Image (cartoon, rainbow, N blue to C red; front, side):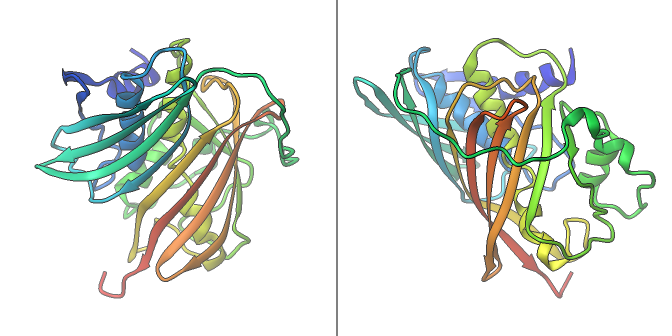
Length: 287
């Protein structure tokens, strides 16, 4: 089984009862469950209760408590509304008897209508950029485990940053980032799976973009980071096994929070999704 197939298997949920599902977690080196995993599993739970011809077009989520990697997560789906064109679902993720995450998602049948989009930034194509692992020659012995795995181990998602920054000696730069990504293995043809996997990947690099103007990174001691809320809109069909560009910017950081936005484009320039997130970005003096 490929790493991508393992990721898809992780995001498949066990059905416990009608509108009730259970998932497990993958340890990626973080002390808590990766937020993108909870987001993707919650979307999988909601999608399981919706007719196949209705695809998600937006979701809005809050991360309430850190997730325990060792414990299963139960996803409770509220079938809020089934309309003529739109379906709405609410999902609560529960661990140890407490909600750790909630999400609202809206699904729509395919419809025709007017169309326009913002242009894709002019950046290098993925074929012109080496894989991120080939750009990191030496890994410090005291590197946090999450970064060690990210830079040294094979992953189900391949990332190619247009401009590689040294996370161990970050320099202050403008809060803009461009990263190509794709799944490295075969994926199901079901469109819902590509939406779910994009939800998983969309939690990467947002807070990193907000840290850029301050010359800090997750590798710095004393930096406390956590996703607080997350919004994702799906505009056009996409495939996660083809190259996608994540164009990110961060217009604001204040009160220990960083706000970032992202636009996701296909290699031929179609805007397929938009993202917004606010996250905790705290510098601790006691670390």
